[in-house]
Length: 285
Length: 294
Image (cartoon, rainbow over the protein chains, first blue to last red):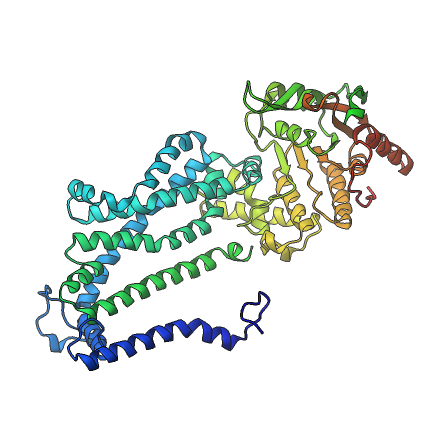
């Protein structure tokens, strides 16, 4: 059977093997090249070995951060205590805080999109502006943001909002406009007012799709967040990666990159599961 | 279409002198497009009075303005000229005086059958923010039992109450949609090709059901269909819309006929033939459904 048959039905084992093949091939290639480089030059820092990366990750996870003054006796601490004072934990918390604030601030963007789609006057007022704003390359505003807001949290969060909010607003707007007119008319004939129709009929129906849209924009959120952190920050995962780059600390950079990918994967998975549990009608319909 | 051009409107329907009209449509024109540019006239000078308790079937070819006429009564659309009044007041936007059962998207997909039926009661009696006080719990219990009563009346099982619309067949969905509209006790029920997507057997069952419900509740019903047999068998009065002039002139009422309650099969067949001959040009596919025993 040809692999390029549309009606092909690969077995479960084949599907499983195929889906993991590229992971295995990538890892094998990396370690093969890494080993070769280390045979040639034992001090190679570009492609650390597994042992070096494990050591780097352990140091980042279990050793106290350089700026942590609260650690008195490193040896007497529990595992949790060590993790809590580690570089990775502190960076994750710093980035996570910015991420959560940004995500929370995207909620008003959803409401704005809903109102733009529901109420013609609000739509007329905002639509052209948001369409224009959406075309501005957020990263090009970074210097202006740093001048306007300083290098504190506000600039980084503003960058994320400028980068992602217009997309979310327009998505919510389009989803709102996509709700069949019959549903809205039906709402009115059942005694609902304008806001009851907007919130209890339309918002409820578009909400799972909005969550999907936010989920698909997670990477964009992280790109803007990392840009801000790399350029002007005192902590955070991207700040650490940028800092370690100066010292060619690939043994820590690679685990950090994998850690960020894992976090994003888990957030994505969590949002998918939440969406499925909270909106069974959406998944099945 | 040209064969209809010279036809005159036929009115064979004496308005009940003792009842004042619940719906007044006066010389209504509807035209789409921007002024000055090429526009399309859909309705041209439609005048119609409907008294409470009538079951009006509106029939006509696709695109002759049946649904537009319904949307005018609903308040979803405004006429370019002329007036549409319901209970004496002009229509501004849809409200609970008119129940509505469209052909598609008739239920909220995010709500179960029970939640769909009780939605109207929830928003009107509980309010926007909901709430969980003891009084509201009692009220919700009343809504639930009332909704289950409607569900049974529609021929559905109580076990269907927890299902989502996508888990129901087309016929079941329309039954729920009718229950959802009727629980609000609307004065007028507007049905826009509500049974068109159903198979002939289900459609016949739904026709029987709606006729029985009309007899029980006495609600004024406007039932839009493109099927003359369905229109004749269901309604107490038949309105046939058709373009009476050139293509761009818009449609008007071509037939306004009272359908006697005692009409037998022969009368019905003759009425159907009359509607077909006057409204539909030869060769039109009329999508004949199974004849209901109503």
